[in-house]
Image (cartoon, rainbow, N blue to C red):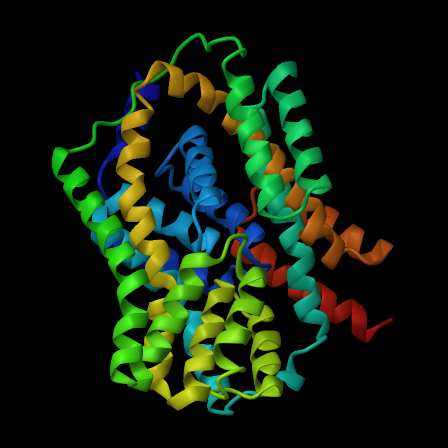
Amino acid sequence: MAEHADSRSAAAPGTPAEVLAAFFALGLRSFGGPVAHLGYFRAEFVAKRRWVDEATFADLIALTQLLPGPGSSELGMALGNLRAGFWGAAAAWLGFTTPSAVLMVLFGYGVTRLGDIAGAPWLHGLTIVAVAVVAQAVWGMARSLAPDRPRMTLAVAAAAIALTFPGTAGQLGAIALGAITGFFLPAPERQDAPPPVARSHYAGAWTALAIFAVLLVGLPLVADATGALPLKVAASFYRSGSLVFGGGHVLLPLLQASVVLPGWVGNETFLAGYGAAQALPGPVFTFSAFLGTAIGGVLYAAIALVAVFLPGFLLVVGTLPFMSAFRGNALYGKALRGVNAAVVGLVLAALYTPVWTSAITSARDFVLALVAFLLLLFWRVPPWLVVFLGAVAAETVSRFS
């Protein structure tokens, strides 16, 4: 009975205000980049709040891996959508994006300086804690989604593929392997029925997908016809958000070609802003707010920010209802068991690179990561407190070494 009560509680609808508050708090402390964000999201919405279960969380990761745009932000939008509908998705984006976007606008106006934070020990401490956060996510997901030898073998194979063929090709190959292998995996003893999807959601999904296509084709045409700089900026950032696979680092060459080549932003300014974006919590795509500020102030910052995230938002709203419906299909359910195990492998591969390789450079770093992992997994210390302690520890050690 208690298990059923927990299930009903987890599935209960929330409010956009609740979603906004939860994601705003994450936007203030989610350092470490897109992969680390998966760990923070899992700790907050699977382990702590129980908005979704482990399998649904893995489904959402698989879905957002297949979509262009900012993967971690799209995962947040999907979680917000499941919790509080369309406005929940919007609230998730607004909450998670606002803290770093505001800081990027301030940096664009010259209020902060990159030299004040680049290479700071406390900043390195945050990247080390990100290793522990992602490791905790791998541990928890593996126990739930790859609990037996066949699925754990599949997870390791997926990790090997992702590491051998870095980028979108490896990710898609790993997910394809999982889907095919899923047909041969033993069926679980008990499988819960997926939540129903209201018919009106499908109408909204088709509308979102249509708007995505119309803007992708129409914005450049209108911008060229009018010659208006705001429309050109919107078209450029919307195109970048529509075509990028693999997260914020892949966005770099697209945006560089879009804003440096036309002369809107100088290359040195561009690189300085991108460097600052690496030091902030939240999504790397908020780099667009800095570029908009450099182009023409806060109005252009808002245009660039909304334009680069809008494609991902429309695609999440447009595809999520169909994923929920497919979960009730027997063949899709078999494939999904394999995909979920493959997702564990993808997160495991990401734990190595870029998370581990960019953070662990010495035995001292490894010790700090181990302590953070111990606090998170066994002492159940809240992630925000572990983030703070990691930054303080790294700064303290640097002063006495």
